[in-house]
Length: 358
Image (cartoon, rainbow, N blue to C red; front, side, top):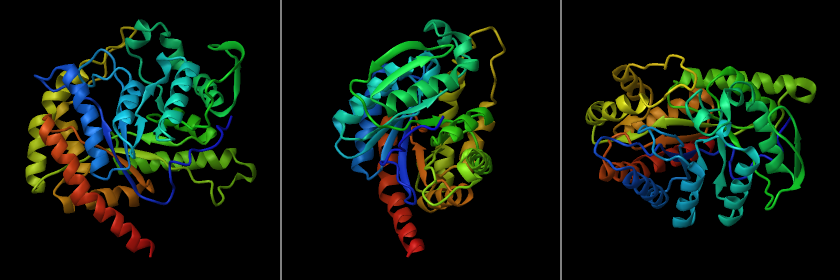
């Protein structure tokens, strides 16, 4: 079931750089202050020339203390005038897709089209128990949820007759023509996004080779579902890739900062993922994960950051990157990082892109 009308605000063929905000709670931080700092980071990103800001959603953990990305986006939209806001992501498995579509439509109209809804399957976490949607919505209900969401964002009226959603036709008030972006962390979700022509959001936990493989798999599915089996001009979809973004006076210094800071957040934060059904919680060796992030993402001096972003673009074909900027765990350093990325990295990407296309 294709989803109608890809959002015009997501451009194809132009490099876009945004920030990705997890609302990470480092030791010693109060959740309320973290949330206020997150809004200030969006304001700083607008002032620094970023195209957009994407906000994560988590529940019951210090890894990220924003339980409603769409609420945070609304607050940030009210504090800004140019920058686009997105959710990365609103967890679809614990929300009603029509209710989420209503909220997205409101922000679309109130912001003049500056809002993009990103959604994801989420995980088999205790959230499913707390919010009452249950493990079946996660395991086999995502496709149905996605179809109801697309219908609610693509039509003036919506109804459903499925396993998880069954309701009479109602008017979407307000209605809006929007296309959600889908976080893809598995081949199954990549297939679902491709069949519907929805852009993917690919995470910072995978490298360029894995991102390129996801894009190739997506395009293969698209070719198999399009009439005639081919992708023609204008059939491209603007995917989004997340990465750690951290600039310092030298690459060695930037790496040292994150190597010291990030484990203090990741160790307790990742422990907050509690499975709903007693299954073993997946574990990740934090030290190795931090080294991986610094190796594959733009962490270093400005030259290194520019080169790393260009490498990702060339390897994956993805022209829209969103940079996780909170890695130092210090409010002042995060704002400095945003401003330095805006002053030292983004202009060089834009000028290089213009030079290459010319």
